[in-house]
Amino acid sequence: MNALSTTVVNATSAKRHELPRTRLSLYYLAGYTLPVGLALMFVPQMTMQLLFSNHVYDDLGLRIGGVFLFAIGLIVAGMIIREVSRAYALTLPVRAFIITALLTLYTQYGDPALLATSTVVTIGFILTFLGWRKDTAEQRG
Image 1: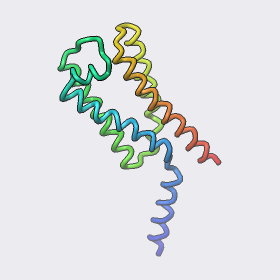
Image 2: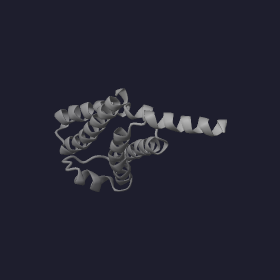
Image 3: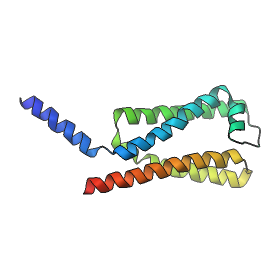
Image 4: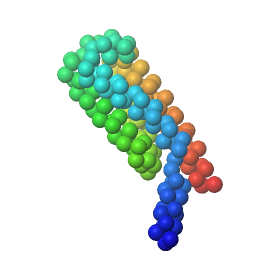
């Protein structure tokens, strides 16, 4: 009976620290990193056309970017599946950096693909931030 009560207490403690809205917002992140990563790996020029690019990029660079984007998607999917709630908020500063970098590159090169990508990342950032704020406010009571 003692082992059963310990299991119940641990399960309840884990759920108390869960950030359900923040976790839900990460589905959006995984939902674009995985397919776009695959698309960049296998059809890089078509993917860039779909992102409204007005530049021609080398396939190798796009494919390498696709590998990294897909890998990020796998990490996020793992965070969702394993319910690694302590790491959810860490996606915010990472995405803030990505948004800043993409907008800086856009000002230098004027490629609409950078603006389109920045918009997609910004939407995810906002969803995660709002979910995280609401989840943490509820935890505080």
